[in-house]
Image 1 (tube, one colour):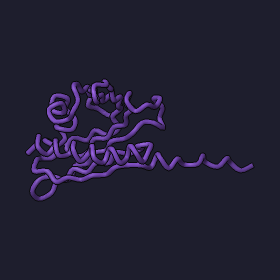
Image 2: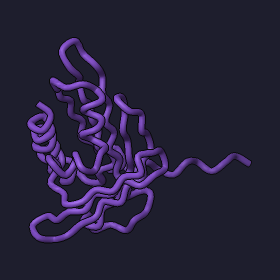
Image 3: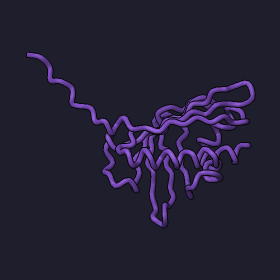
Image 4: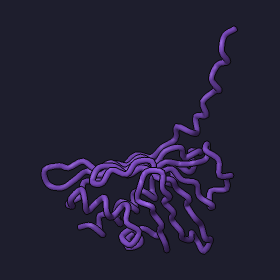
Length: 151
């Protein structure tokens, strides 16, 4: 008897946004801006951030969009200072139940260049083409805010 075939892939799970930005800052400074709660609230449009700063720990963002409060409940998957920060999360404002297939992933990678660093990010498992299009604009704004904070 042959094994059951794998379930069909959901094409929505492959939807992602990728961006890259050159920053005139050290890898350690960029990593701190991405991971330290007191730094994140200076440029990221949230009110509070909690982080366990270790793989398997929590990473939570609390804020509001158009007056509606939200919480992004995250779990840190990679925490390599100066190099990589990755977490999966589910948000109370996305209208989905908190199940693994609804958890999005944000993956930051930092590479030193001659004059600073290149920050690359991928925001994956976006679930719909509409969210993918929206998040492209959101990330353009957020990366601009990060640049203004660092430079």
